Every structure is written in structure tokens, then in C-alpha cells.
Image (cartoon, rainbow, N blue to C red):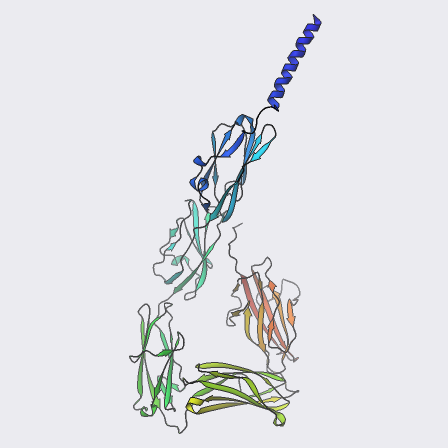
Length: 557
């Protein structure tokens, strides 16, 4: 009797154990069909049929489950998705299909993967993750408008409605909730520089500005309409009268268009004058002896820009018999600025501008007569037909008095002219002037020396290579030093002014090593040039402010 009861109890316990084991895991059961998979028919068309998504456009991803009683959970991973990056769905599974929102703020290749976790502690993912490429439809055409004229900002839209379209014009921004906005944005553009071509940026963000798309660039120019300006550039101009002592006169003038639209036409007394560029015009007149103060040659210039504004100016050309051939060439001394100089230098960087009043070719050469009768011809010999040509020589100087003679000849006219400089080289000559910085380039681009040093020069690189061109006409250049400072005019706030790059050289051209921005977007560099004297005037300092241009505007924090 007791043994029967024992058997029954054992059988019941064993049966219960088998049932529990069957619930936990049955090794003979098939779990391979227990999966969470993407359902293309219920997903957005852009996900199910295409490879390309649009930024800030919400798409729907549909996931269905099969043999759900054997699924512990499934995970949907969508890297870069604004709604979620990684989400897990656990039982009870009450739906046939689960819908997930997907939207991206950045461009590029993205992937979505679904992983199934089964009750047999196994897992599997999609054989091939859903792959798409996110692109941006944003585009703003270049803006070239008269200030205050109709100007609608417009771009191809993104898909979502709850977004902000932002146009950035330097310090000013225009924000709209549609892709075509603000037919009159001018009241919001308080800091734009009229007449200056600049770069703007366009991007899209969500309403809370937590996410921001990559920015696209566009150029803009707002200008005030004004008629062309006419300026005569002839030597011998007295008010509106050109006086010449040469029988052949080349009448030269400039026409400057300040409307920003360009010139439509330039007319000289019913004819079209010749032009050497978009600004300079000229015409040559032979037989000037027939025109006097009482009977001048009248020339009327009519200039019209492309928005129909016209300027008319009248000039009078007169011949005065001086008994001379007439000055067809003029020398403008640049360095040194005067025809006499006392210096300690053994080499002089000699610069002269040669102004050609004819339209014939001019040949310019220079000869140096040194102390003791030594004579040397300098190369190169310049030959040109420009109206103004810049000539430069490195002139060796001997101790004592050196004479530099520069001659300009016009063979076709049988004409020549010369200028003479007297340079006294003395080892005891006092150095009374500081060195001069004549030019600066940043990564090969010319830095405008007239620019306010508080105005940043934009650099399209993570580092800047600075080239400094400097001269000193007396004791010579001793050193060029560059230091990063906290702000323009002050080295306070960063500790001792330690030179980043320096050089000691007789050369007037100095090039730095690459200066890295690092994590900074803006830096101020102080360039110090010293000559070889110990006087108080031996230093010239120049500040330059550099800003690194970045292609993508970082999200607001």
C-alpha cells in the first residue's frame, strides 16, 4: 500500500518535471522561424523601394514577428536616427506589425538592423541591414540684389513640416518655417556690408534646435545703385583739361562702376575706345599741334551701367609747344621714395613704377655706378606696353657713393628718359626709420594691409602659413617674429609672449611653418619685424586676426 503511494507520488513529480522542462526549453523544438523582420509593404516607400532618404523627413519602418511565442524580445538599431538610436520591444506582443519612426539630420550612409532574441537563448539579425543614403535637397542660388529690391529666399524643402529654415548672413539670420520665406528680408539684415560679396549659409533644424543639418554655402551681394564714375588719368590734367607737349597724345581714363551690375557701354565722342582691362580705357590722337587752349580737342565720354544709369563727362585736350619732345614716360620712386639715401645696407631692394603715356613698347634697364668707377648692368631688362609697370632690382652697394641710373626707351618713337638715384653707403649711417612690412600672404592669398586688424581674415585650412615681405633701407632686417596673442594689441592672458616661429635673415621675404588653429576657430598673430639698429625705431608690429572657415556648422549645445 505504501509502496504504491510512493510510486504515484514519484510519477506525478516526474511528470511535473518533464512539463517544466518542456516549458523552459525543448531541444527537439525548431526555433529558426521565430524572427522579427522588416515588412516592406507596411514601411515607407523611401525605405522599402529606394536607396535615398532626405534629411529631416520622417519615414516609417514596419517590423513583424513570426512564431512570437518563442521570442523573448527584439531590438531595432538605427544609428543617427533623431527619434531613437537603439530600442528594445519585449512581450507581450500585442500587434502584428510594429511601426518605428526614422529621420536623420546628417547626410551620408546609414544602416538599420533588427535583432531577434529567442527563448532558447539564441539570437539572429537581419541577413542584410537596411541601408540608405541620406542627402540634403537644400540649395540657395547666389543673391545679387539692389538693397531693398524684392529678394525671396528659397530652397527645395525637406519632408517634415515642423522644422526651421535658417539663412545666415554673417551676424544676421533669417528664420522661416517654410522653404520659401521672407520676400523682404532687409529689416533683419542689420550688419551686412553694402557692396561687398560675401558667403552665407543655409541649414535646417528642428523647432527646439537640438538637431541641425549640414550647412550649404551661397554668395550674396547687396549694393546701392549709383551711376558710373569717370576719371581721367593723363599726366598734365588741369581740372577737365589735358595739357600735352607731345604731338601724339594717348588719352587715358578710368570708368568705375559702383552699381555692382557692371558696365553696359563706354563711348568716346561716338566711338568705342580701346581697353586694357574692365576699368581702363584709352584712345590715341595724332597731330595735337592743331589743338590749343583757344581751340581744344573736345572729347565726350558717355558711360552706362547695366541698370541704365548714365554718366557724361567732357574733357578738353590742348597742345602747348614747350620746345621739348614731351614726357612720354614718368618714373615713380617706390623704394627708396626719394632720389637720395644714406644707408648701411650692402644691397638695396630698388622699386620703381614706370608710367607709359604712349601705347608703344617701353624698354627699361638699370646701371649702377659704384665707388672707384665700378659699373654693373642689372638684370632683368623689362620690356612692356602696359600703362604702368612695376620694376624691381636687387642693387649691390659699395662703400661710398653709388649712382643708380634707370633708363626707359621707346624705340618706335625715338624717345628715351632716365632717372638717377644717389645712394651713400656708410657703416656709420644712423638708422632713423623702422622697417616696413610691404606685404603679407596667408596660405598664398594676399592679406590686405589696409584691413582693420580686428576684422578676421578667413582661412580655408586647419593651419596657416604666413609669408611676410619686409624691407629696411638702412641697417637691414635683423629678425621676424610671430607670436599668438590673446587679443589685438595685447599679449596679456596667455603668459609670456613666446615666439611661435622666428627667423634671422638678410632676406626681405620670410615664410613661417604651418601655424595650427587646434581647437580654436579664431586666433590673433602679432608679427614683429626688427632692424639691426638699437634705436627706439627699430621695430614694426602688425596684428592679423585669422578665422578658420568650417564647412559644417556645428549643432547648438
